[in-house]
Image (cartoon, rainbow, N blue to C red; front, side):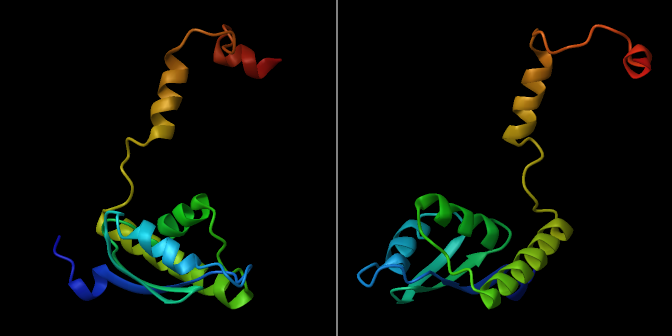
Length: 135
C-alpha cells in the first residue's frame, strides 16, 4: 500500500513543564529522539518546546511521549495540551490501524501469556469447564 508522504510524515510540537528555570528538557529530548527509528528531525525551539517530525508508519506520538516520560521528562498537562494530545493519539492510531502498520501481533505480552499457560503451576483448576461454573 503506497501512502503519500504528506499523510505519513507528521510535524508536531511537544511542550514540557517549566519546573526549574535552568532545566533544558527540549534539548535532552531532542538528543534522545534523534536516535529513535522513524524520527526525522527533533529541534528544540525553546528550553521547554520541541518541534519534531516523524514517520507515522514507524512510530507515533504516543510511543514517543511514553519514551520521554520513562526518560524522566515532564510533559505539560494543561487542558489544551491534553486535548490536542488526545486528538493526535486518536487520529494517528486510526491511521496506523487502517494502513496496516499497527504494532506487531507477536508482542511481548502475548508471548508471556502463552508461556504462562504452558507452564505447570498450581493456578489451574483441574475440573471441567461446566463444573467450574456450577459452584
